[in-house]
Amino acid sequence: MSEQITITRPDDWHLHVRDGDFLQAVLPDTAKQFARAIIMPNLKPPVVTVAQAQSYRDRITAALPKGSSFSPLMTLYLTENTLPEEIVKAKESGFVHAVKYYPAGATTNSDSGVRQWSKVEEVLEAMEQCGLPLLVHGEVTDPAIDVFDRERVFIEDQLIPLILKYPKLKVVLEHITTASAVKFVLTADKNIAATVTAHHLLLNRNALFQGGIRPHHYCLPVLKREKHRQALLDAVASGNNKFFLGTDSAPHPQSLKENACGCAGIYTAHAAMELYAEAFDSIGALDKLEGFASFYGADFYGLARNTSQITLTKQQVKVPSQLQYGSETLIPMRAGEFLVWSFNHES
Ligand code: NCD
Ligand code: ZN
Image 1 (cartoon, protein in one colour):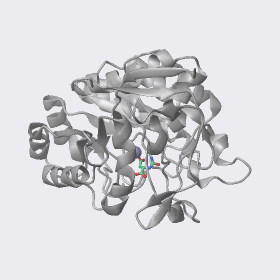
Image 2: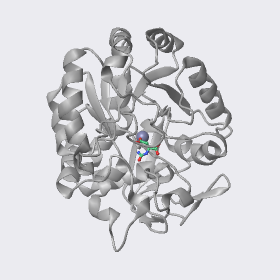
Image 3: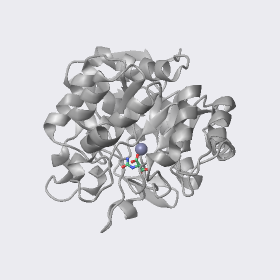
Image 4: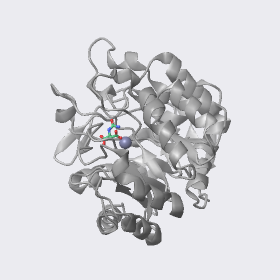
């Protein structure tokens, strides 16, 4: 008998599903594994108002496979023009669960992001007051700062002062990649948490240059050294409830990844739980997977935990070499290679 684990159905606390045909192509992958996901607002143009979030939510719901009970949790994209009133509206809506901060120019579709924190002071105060979490893409954009240091420098220069100024603000440092981020989260108050991706748990920066340049392993924040991957593994294996699941599955057409200026983003939604199970199993921490994947995020966001279950089996499955992505193709993580764990679809 193969080894199996059954856990409460998980949620994905950081996900990109895009829009239109792309949305239609990727959403079923997430909906089959997760009950809910925090939907990133970095569309073009970005989702900046509650009304836009509502219509994006309707498009997502309409794109769900028949019979799916998946529920999208919406976010607003913070700009220097966001009004405090919109925050109050967001909180009252019941379907907007957070506000996403992108430093202007840091990553895919982040041009409308924030340049100066001083421009969003009232908005942050409103969020602190009504308990709406700020989801932070934690990297500085200064081209003079080494790309591998941008997360650490952001924490030191921007995030520490920010949480001192807004001590009650709920903050999720998204897709953490370094030992500095782990340390920051561990030492901060309980209103500060972090999401961790499967790819940052499984890959170090060597994966970018394995026998040649590997554009499908390029994401932001960029993969880091092995010692940082180990720090992330230690953090999730500790069972600390400040660290929870956020895939940051970020699909891009193959043509824009295999490009002289390739886009950042790794697609993992096709095998999200299989990849997390592999990472936790690799360090003998499968008993910590359920808290990380199914409990701590819901608790942080003040939402009920899920009640249904999923089962994973330790059994190799091959990942397709490509997936259809609207009229384009998408290269998923592990394309043409094997997963160690498989997801039981009938559960
Ligand atoms: C994300 C995307 O493609 O939207 N890319 C990525 O590399 N993670 C944006 C982001 O979360 O930084
Ligand atoms: Zn992201």
